[in-house]
Length: 293
Image (cartoon, rainbow, N blue to C red; front, side):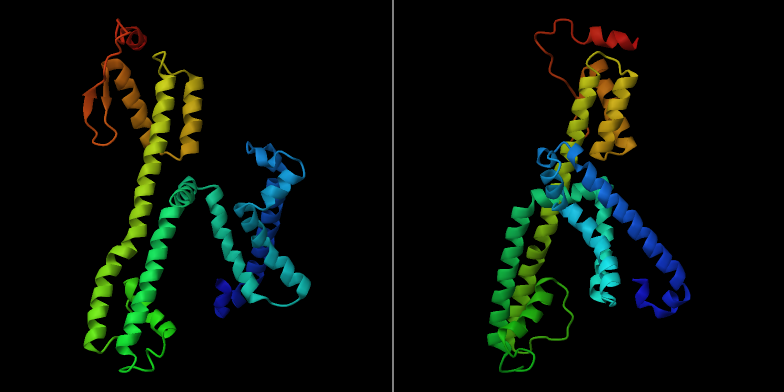
């Protein structure tokens, strides 16, 4: 990125080159460590000492790790400044997903919602093709250069249906403008559809993670107290689920309130309601509350 700014890059070329070598060495060592320790993973596909490591090397994150360090060695061996290949170094950003829980959740939501998002994008592509065909028929005679063919019209249809609208090409005929208006109205809903699907997926993923943590809290509070081992287990689960300390503290307080008062807090509206009493529990919750006295 900085290499595209000759004034800045040339002035600090030595610093940037040293940082490049350091990052390559660091990423190479980390890549080798990940490949070697992949057999210790809980995934049964990686248990074999040789085949397991080969399978791990073909996973998306491992391929990104490999592609990150390849441009340096290819450029050094070939002796040519392969700028297009060096641009692959930007893939280092995707390696942050290994350490950022929020990015992991984003990838998980994308995987879960992939069929629905793919269907929505397919419908959008079909509508772009139909819009380009109709606009070509309406505008070809009036603007033979701008709408020389249906593939030429695809550019206008794409920027219109994605609500960008650069304005470099516009319909001039009455039929073309009517079609453009109809396409613009339809595109508002179609472009927003994938965003709505992702937002719904995020909400569902957050709800599942909070529910998992609440279940762990309820299990830890079965005897009415949380000992140091329970605290450590809760901390580990909190980090694995990517919950903030504030969220975890609120759910822990809700767990204490649940066993001490017999009430629960709705996870949707936040209102307090009485927990249904277990008919087999004749003594209520007094035997557990006594541990807090």
